[in-house]
Length: 576
Image (cartoon, rainbow, N blue to C red):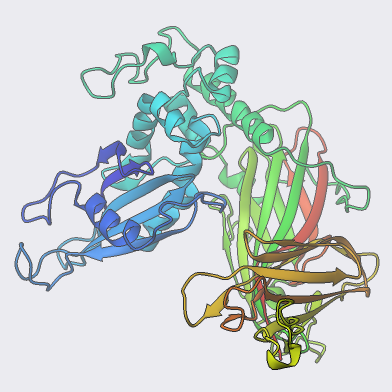
């Protein structure tokens, strides 16, 4: 279980502290030992400190172990094992002290992997939403009371309890200083006044239901939950506006769903779902489904072979449906397209008795959510696909590097010398240069094209006499796109807005030491090519949507589907 939870700033100061469990007898260290272990083992070893997390929820994170069972320390032999799980998010650190000791007498054990997932994908997005979308130290200080009460609702005795935003909004109203708080105040009048928030604690809590700022004669719980549900969808739509669907996007035909035919879910009932309120109402009925795939691969620069490749995909949904609709989604080629798939908890795989792994039945949350996530390993390496041929990588890359030695012209003799033949000419030491040749060839079919192609080559130098990096100069020529050399970052960047199907683009560059500062000893090394691109209307795994049914809909909704593939981390190793 989670013993304590901390939110730290970039200087190591504790902004928020939540002690979920009192220290047990014989516990290791004090209540803030986890903070000390984190700063000693992580920040001291990493000079850049907390990063700007760029993942969906938070950022890069990891876990540390201290006081392992069986170790000899201040607590003696057999001290309980503890884990410190942390996640970086915009210069803030979310840190949890986890009691991960496995004992035969206690079953209340939480794995550190579950805590990392809870911090990154649940807690950080919730705190960001309650801070008005700005996850900064100032926003956290301004909404201290709200965030502290949020932690009390989310964590129950050290375990995650209520994590759905639609269920948290009636319990913990946001501050009126945020956009979400002003929206709730305008509709329900049940928003918290940020100027009169009381310090969290049992003695300072109001008597009207335990929620600070709720009017004594406000709306009923059902009305409040319904309004909170609708406002949550509006908030999610305003913070992550969905781009307009192009005309080429496929619109799933609105099936003539048997609205009068009762399904097993209808007979079982859908009341009491924590992720959706029965009173949800929308003027327009629509549902959008996005298949988003991210590629992680290592390529060989010789002929563009894939050494290692993995595809991580998600099925993102945006729903604006009234009432309690039931959706039946039929996926295509799931057994051949993916290796494993994890679903949102709203999915009921056993709802239809005769369904297979490709049929998904669920009552969706209102607004944006991730319906499923899946992974495909070794997509471009053996074993081959069902047709007997290896699936090609969407962008074939050849990256070759060679070395050239250039001898500068000899310096002329001094003009003051009467006999020029008596003074030998001075020759500058030869310089070694790198010759780079990169070719990109799009292997997409039909009218598809590869967009936003960026190739980046960060350079380093190997200097035998000094650790300081010598300056470099670069002469570059590209057949298309824009190629630029950044002398401060010591990187070459080549960008192409688009690359049509079965078209190629080439780049040649010569990189050599600049000036005469130990030019012979400073040799630029061949960098690894970092590649990024996106391909609309393509699923590299071959996954697709075959049919989408909406049951119990008040009006026939509009259905839209699109897919996009982009890179998460693609590297190309140079060939000589």
